Image (cartoon, rainbow, N blue to C red; front, side):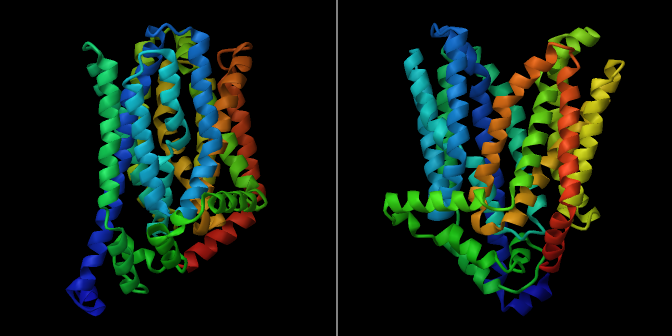
Amino acid sequence: MEEEEEEDGGPGAAGAPERSGRFVRCLYVVGFLDLFGVSMVVPLMNLHIKSLGASHTVAGIIGSLYGVMQLFSSTFVGCWSDIVGRQYSLLACILLSALGYFLLGTSTTVLLFAISRVPVGIFKHTLSISKALLSDLVSERDRPLVMGRFNAASSVGFILGPVVGGYLAESEGGFYQTSFICASIFLLNGGLVWMLPWNENTGNREHHQGKGTNSLAAKANHDPHFKSAANRAVTNNNVFQSPWIQVATVLKKIKEIACSNLWDIFLVRFLMSVAILLYYSNFTLALEERFGVKPLFSGYLTSYSSALGVLAGCLLGPITRLYQHNTYRVLLHSSTFTCMLILLYASALNIWMVILSSTFLAFSTTIGRTCIIDLELTIGGNEASGTLLGVGQSVTSVGRIIAPLLSGIAQEFSPCGPPSLAVGLALVAILIMNANKQKYCSHGNVKLKNQ
């Protein structure tokens, strides 16, 4: 390490990787705080809206409207981040989300509750933009590792948040306190993003262009698209363009993605998302009907799986090295493993087989979720990473809308109906991946040559 610093030209050059490392680690903290704050509030929202006098139907309609807003806004916001730069778009989404949770903390009527969900429904894409920024900052070789760690940090927040939120809800006015704390956490995230060394980070990368060190930033310099991506993410001045020009550019980018050859990757993402959602859709009810276990045990099992998912995110680095950074092979094998584990769960004869399938499913789904994002960015290119991640989120949102309907229909036949249908959808996804093997592998070979 010292020899490499000496070759780079002195201590000023040696400081660049350290600053870039702090940049990435700060984004991990942003991801953790984001899901920690949200998961404090979300489990309490149904109880709160019912306490305001809303019926189950009204509560369901408001929840569905939020999902629809997320569905349509994710692609536009992601594309907008490609145009105006990550700094401005991420700050805007964080601050407007904070506004939404602040309004939620003042919601004393059903109407105010519904209004508070609008800014969050449109602009709560902070995790997607953070992932796009990480994709800009690191090389393709390091991307699965960094994404895995980011997902792991976010998952820790998702595990701890409900515990803290449940504790606060026990006090008088607990929901309002929790909402204000969530809004404060988003404001804290906004401050962290504002203080990141955006311009310094870019300048230091330019100095290190072509140099090799063990840090994430130095490895990123070997990526031929890195310099333009980093400059776009940090110093893009398109935020000052006319709103009409920005809208026209957004629509143009979306049209380019729609006309690209990425349909099969998004279809694989859709099928695997629906398959996993079907697995979880009637998990608690099916365990009670099949094995007579109580909902409390199902909750413990879900928390256990979430904790294992965090561990899986940390293991992505060794796994990708084992596969020689071939993301396609990792995705294919993890999807096949997921399909087999859901089949094991559907045919389980006792609760121990369910625990076994849940244990390994936590690993395969976490790895598969990260790899499909990496494959989207590898084939689609970093030039539109925000748009690609936004479209991917929209595809997953469609899955969230369709999965409950399919689950209800399948459950009419058997408690094992939803996971059995999930096995069929996962098999279709695996067949699509095998049919397009040559395309995925060719991109994987280019990726390896660029390292």
